[in-house]
Amino acid sequence: MNLRRRQIKAFTLLEILIAISILALIVTAIYSSWTAILRATKVAQDATASVQRARIVIRVLEDSLGSAHAFAQNMAYYRFLAENGSESSLSFVAHLAKSFPRSGKFGDFDVRRLTFSLEPGTQGNKQLVLRQTPLLLETDDEEKANPLVLAENVKEFKTEFWDTRQNDWVEEWTQTNQLPKLVRIILRLSDNPHSLSQREPITRIVSLPSVIVQPAWQKPMLPPGAGGRPLPGQTPGQAPGQVPGQVPGQIPGQTPGTTIPGQTPGTIR
Figure 1 (cartoon, rainbow, N blue to C red):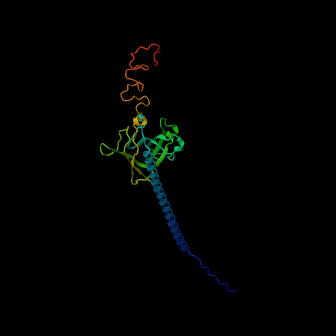
Figure 2 (cartoon, rainbow, N blue to C red):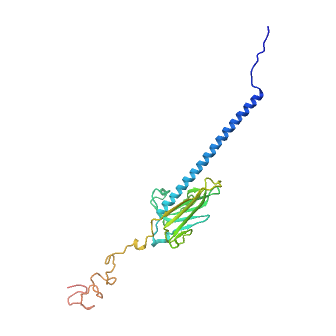
């Protein structure tokens, strides 16, 4: 009986090595594409978040500056303070709406001093924070330790003010007892703390609609004769209709100190 050898077809070692190499190249290309997609998504998310955060910060600044007010009679409580530089800050008093951030914490204290300041962040970056204090009250410890962080990775926060005397923008506001007519806000953010690139600055010009309330507006002048205000030609303290120099209760033409017989002093018969 003749036994025939069966010829089994199979891959050679060289073919297997080539196939493994091609598979490795395909897996590497897929992995590279996937990581590139993830990096691009992260960059896009950071950029979107940075732009949205900047819009929120600008909106908060616009709303608060638009609600600023001051009373000249108590100007020590309503000073408008501003400082530029590496630790920029902006502080003023505003009458805030219930929708303003953290209004629920302060309840009915809707007149508060707002302080925007640029401070070091947790990752060595700069962050813009907001502290709020009800008027005539001290800032509590919680607000000092945990302010509202409006934006992180802040590269620049700057305020400029329109000076009507110089007819130009100034970086320093020295008239702390006055409210500026216009305020220009310049805000520049980066996408992340390690980014070397900077986005274009966002600039807004805010017009303050309010003016300082004068003392006469708080206490309006009363009409003549009302509230003890003398009439024209009347001596202060003189009763209406009383003749100048006449003693209260004295009959016109009567000598001071004399009385009519049978008349009690101070009575009219």
